[in-house]
Image (cartoon, rainbow, N blue to C red; front, top):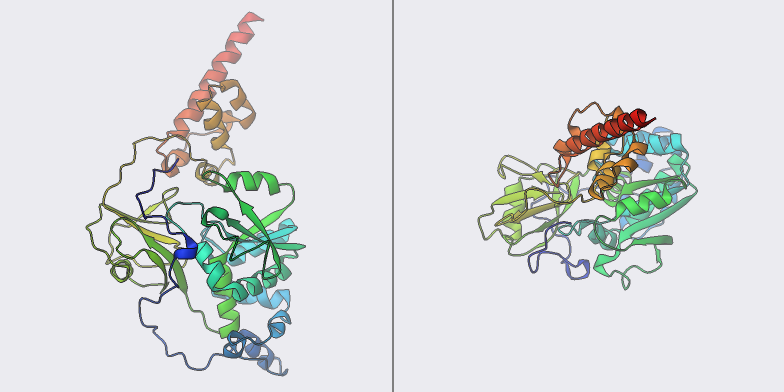
Length: 370
């Protein structure tokens, strides 16, 4: 399990302040022209409403007139990154289309104790997220669209059974939450797109400009005013920390939570990227050198042999070595990628090798008996 939180670190979404812009925008607001307008102008058809009109409450019907091919072309040129997977939205949509998924989810699961940016965006950008998810649904041919969120922020008052007409799926329980969800929907055929990527796509289509903005939960015991901040890609990490009130000297600064953290070593040299979801500054990091398996799935995602090291480790921890045989530990070539990627500092590769050796020894003993 992740380490216990210091008092006041976790930011309940309903108490988090409105998203702030820490730095002046590099461009004047000026006139915005939607991608629909550009596409229709190129084809000689009647112009659509502008992005400003759409933002002021005009109908989204013009955006729904885009074909799946037109939407995919916009996505391909934009290089939008899904903040939950670090994969381009274009690659995800092509993959979902090939798999012929039934369910497409807007992913707002903040399953890390230091992150609330997904839930915050649900409250700030409901129309944009719904619009983009509907357009992505048209591209990949999914039958249903839903919202997926973690209910640790008690969003029942703000987000009920339905969100902008979409049914809501809530995840409950202990961290991590995603493995149980994936087991439930694996056979049903589903795809997930981060709410940040959806907001990015909606902004691009409505405004006609690629405003590369990230929403970050900035927190930690070194931060005076923990909050969710919207910042341009390329903004210095030091500017973000100073805006939120860095009032102590941190021992460690990392992005994207404690389950799979990315250490930030140079706050003046490193900058915000669109796939960032959080920045956490802690005065001390009292983590044990080794923890029990978190179930994050990082070892599975990096295995080039397509094995399931997670299940091998869990069976090993239970002392059920024989059970690991069904996960083919003999196919492991001991590349070590699983061990390197493990946020709990578990020697995953060593455990797989040990299980393989013990299974071989057990098989040899059985053969001798026979």
